[in-house]
Amino acid sequence: MAASLATANVHQKGTYYARQLRAWAKAFITDRDDLPFDQYGRSKISKLDNEELMNELHLHLQSVGRYVKAGDLVTYLSDKEAQSRFGLKSTISLATAKKWMHTLGYHWRTDHRGQYVDGHERGDVVNYCQNIFIPEMMALQAQMRRWMSDGLTSEINLEPHECPVEVWLQDEVTFYANDRRHSGWYHLNAGSDPRPKGEGISIMISDFISADRGWCRSRDGKESARVVFRAGKSRDGWYTSEDMLKQVTKVMDILENNYPESDHVLVESGNGGVETTLLGEDGKPVHGRDGKVLKTKVPMQDGRFADGRPQPLYFPPGHEHAGKFKGMAEILWERGYNVSKLKAQCTKFRCPEGATQCCCRRILFNEPDFVGVPSRLEEHCLARHFKLIILPKFHCELNFIEQCWGYAKRLYRLYPPTTKDEEMETPLVVVLDLVKWELPFLP
Image 1 (cartoon, rainbow, N blue to C red):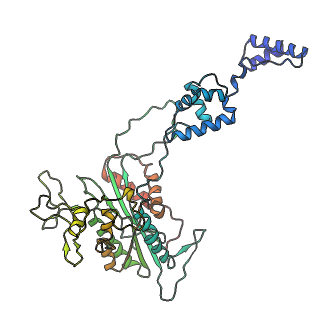
Image 2: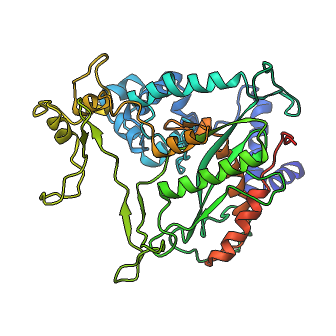
Image 3: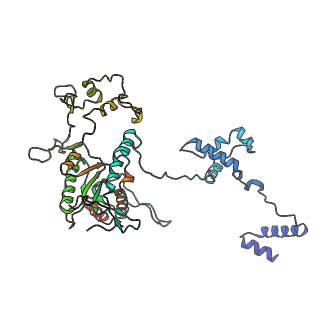
C-alpha cells in the first residue's frame, strides 16, 4: 500500500493509479505473462514506421514540386489503391498530415535567400567567361603574388624584365537606413516595437580593393578612391558612366603616384549607367521648372557601314521618332539585310551552334564595327596604360569584395537607426575601415 501510494505520488497521480498498480502487481505475481496492456492499443505505433510507405510519400512530395503542403499527403492517401496497399481504412486527417510532414523532414519556415541568378547561363556570358575572362586572368597569375595557406607568407616568381601585377577589384554596395539588426534574445514578456515601413534612405558605396594592399588608398592614407553616393531624384541623382570615369581616374592617379613599382589591373563590375546630369555652359547642373536636376542620355557613337561611312544609330531630326534608338532591325535593314522574318533574339539567348544569321542579335553582334569595340572606360584606361577587365555576370564568387561588404553590413546593423544622411554616413566609414585583413599589407 505504502509503495503504491509513493509511486503514484512520484508520477503525480492519485489513489486510483495506486490501486491500478497494486492490481497489476498481484496479476503479475499470479501469472508472469500477465503484463499490463496499453489501453491505446496500436495507435501509438505510427504508420510511418513502414519504410515502404515513408519512401513512397517522399517520392510523391518530390513530384509535387517546390511548394508542397500537408494537404498533399491527405489527397494522396485518399486513393483506394494506396489505402489497400498500406492497410489503411481511410485517409489521414490534416492534423496528422502536419505531424507526418515533420517526421518526413519538412518544416514550415521562410525560404533561405541564396545567390541571385541573372543570365549567367546565357551562351554569350558562358563564352565570355571561358574564352576571354578566364584566359586573361590565368595569363596574369604568373606575375601575381600567391599567398600561402597560412595567410601570412607569399611568393612571387618574376623574370628579370617583369614587374609584379596587382589586381584591383571594384563593386558597389548600398546601405539602407532601416536595415538594422532584428534578431536577439528577448524576454517572454517583452512587447513588440513599431518598425518603420520600407527600407528608408540609402547611401551607395563604390570602392576598389586589392588582396595585396586592401582598399585603394595613398601610402599616407590621405587620398582615397572611395565614392559615397546618395542615389535619388532629389539627392545626387544616379550613378552614371561619367561618375565611374571620374572614380577610375582617381584610382589611376593614386596608383601611379604611390605604387609605380607594380603593373596594375582594374577589374570592373561593369554596372556603369548611360544617363548623366545635364550641365550648362558654366559647368553647373541645369534645373527644370520643377526645380529638379535635368538628365540627359549619353548616346552611343555611330556605327560603320562596310565602305567606312558612318551609320547613325539614332533617328535624325525631323523624323517622327527623332532622337530615338533605331533598333536592331532598322540598323540591319540599312546595311542590306532582310530581317523581316527573323526574331530579335533566339530563345534564352541560345543561338544554334555555328549559326550566324539565326536572329537579329546574332547578325548584329557579328558585324565588324560591333565586335570587340572598346567602351569609353576601356579607352580611358588604355590611354593611361592600365589594363581593364570586365567581370562577367554572376561574379559574386569571383570578387572577394562581396565578403567585405557583408562583414561591414553586419557591423552596420548594430548601430541605432537614423533618418539623417550625416548620421548614417558616419558609421559607414567606421565599419568599412573595420574590415579585418588576415594578410599583411605591402609597404
